[in-house]
Image 1: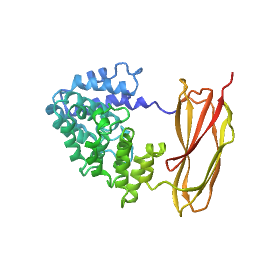
Image 2: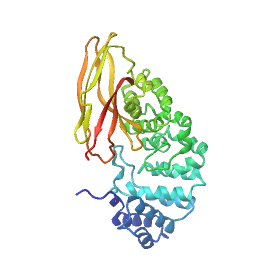
Image 3: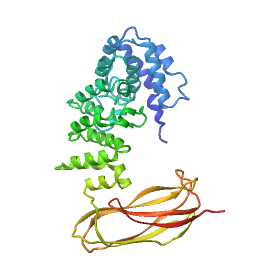
Image 4: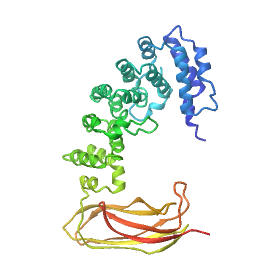
Length: 377
C-alpha cells in the first residue's frame, strides 16, 4: 500500500526538526514546538500539516530575520541532488519537505524585507524549492523582486537558477496566481532568455513549464518566441521549445506549429468520412481519412481531430485529440481509420444530439462532419 503523501510531515519528522533546531538555539522550546506542530495531526492533510508546523515555528523561533537567519542556516543539511530527490527527509540537518513550512514562515515574517528574505530563500531552495514562498513578494513588489530573480538566473547553483524560473511561473500549480504576469508576462521573458540554454535539464524543464503557463493566455507571443528560439537551436533547446509549446501543439495553434516546422501542406486529395453517423452511447465514433500531398516533400505533419461535444445549453465545445505525426512524401497518401470510444468518463457529461468531428493538418481545418449521439433511455 502506498504511504499517504501527507506523511512527509510525520510526527517523526516534527520531532527531528525540533532536535535539529534545538541544537542551533538554546532558547528553542522543543516540547512546545512538537505540541503545536502536532495539533490535529491525524486529520490534517499535507498542506494543513505544513501550516501547523509553520504556526509552531512562529511560536518558538525569533520573528525577526536578523535573529532567525543564523539559526536556520546553521540547521540546514546538504543540498538536494538534481534528480528529483528533494523530498527526502533522511539526510543530515533540515532538508526535504521539512523546508516547506520554514520557507512559508520566512515569507510570513519577512514580507516587508525582501532582501533579507531572499538571502534565506537562496539557501533554503537548495534543499527544497522555495518556489511557493517567493510568490507573495512578487505579488507585492514585482519590480524589486524580479531584480533578484535576474541575479538568481545567473547563479552558479542550478537550484537557484531553477527558482528564478519556477518561482515566477504565472500559473504555478498550488501557488498563488501572479495576476500581473498572467496579464502581461513580458517582464519574465529576459529571465527565461537567460535560462533557455541552461546546462541542466532540471532548469530547462522549469523554463518550458513557465512558457507553457504563458501560452495559455498569450499564444501568439509564445509562437513568436518559439520561432525565434528554434533558429540555430541545439537539440536541448529544441526539446525545451517543444515541451514549452505542448498546450499550443495539442490545440493545433497554427503559428506555433509553423514555428516548429509544421507549415501548411497543399493537398491534391483531402477526404474524411464518418463511418458511424449515429453513435450509441457506450460504443464508439468511427471515421476514416485519405490525404495526398501535392508539393514536393518531405513535409513534417501533425494530424489532429476535434470532437465538438454538445453541452447542456446546446452549444458545442471542441476537444482536440492527436491522431498521428510523421513526414508526408509527395504523392504518397496518408490514410487510416480511427475509432473513438464514447463511453462514461469522470471528466465529461455527455448529452444526446448532433455533435461534430473536425480534422486538422498542421493546424489547418480540413472540414467538419456531423454525427448523432444517442443516449440510453
